Length: 468
Image 1 (cartoon, rainbow, N blue to C red):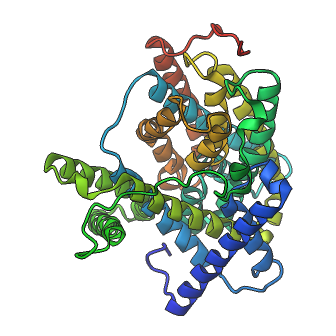
Image 2: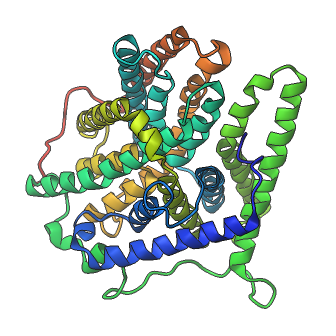
Image 3: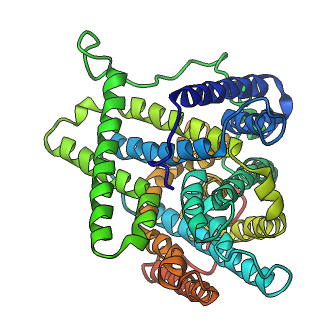
């Protein structure tokens, strides 16, 4: 069953979002007053998510949020986030910064996938022969792509016998967030101590407002602008309506596409198409934005308000994802999950230490810490970490991260397709995973050959690591 077919009681949906909202408020209060969370700049949504997990049916049982409903929220909020991102931006930018960022990020995801499959093979051939092979493919999805995609594909693979696949995806994403922030902040501390960062004031650059998460001592920023008259319609309602219309078109496209596939005898691929709904949603959003630009109607869309709506989606998505983790499933797979997560973190660290001083002309440490945040969490966590070393986003790093994510999405399409090959073409046989293992290694070598050919990466380090 996909997330569109789940029958719900509307009362449960309302109560779920009320609980999630309450957890976000609790997370905000805890971040405001507890120094531990301030020291590591742990986002309120992660604090809220773990509070929800503790208070939920998996541990204390004080709330009745079901894993199926929470998974459905994660599924839809992922697509809504991509729609808002696709609608907000008028232009794209190409060049060394965004392209190298995209290639570095994609390299990290592929290496995480290689490690995930390698560890899976070791467990299957030794102590856990019944381990579902696709668990290794969920590692890069959870670490490098966040909970939405990890849950969608993991849940899809449950029909092939992957018990708790969606929960495993959420678990990898939650562990990735912990690496992103706890390890990320320690890396920043070390970078400041070793004078690798351009942050002149050191830790003094982290203001009280940044630590507490509450803007009290500095001037509040503008959230967005009103693009329509409030007498006619609430401008924020129009932005939400635009997102809803794009999502409606997305559903219509997928519904008709999968109907055609079933009639053509390709019914086995239908769940995969529904799992990649967020990509189709992004394409529809980009097409809509381009149409508005060409007709000179793009002034109706406010980037600030779209950013806020994307942020709301991410906050609720993260809380739902962590609340939806099944302790029973985590215990079932704890050994491979632990080994994969540790090796993924180590490989990501050494990869980024290698490429960030060879593939970029400037701001090497800032790019390193931002990529660390994205490859263990999401783009949001990368920007949170970057803000510590670049509080006002004065450098080009934040812009390159955003534009590079768009480039990386399309460069990564072959990898996303390869993830579904063992199930759709080899009936989930182990040799199908070995074929994918070889293909993703080949694609990584192809990317690095292209990267070196265009001169965007030098294998000999031409830059010093310390800032004078």
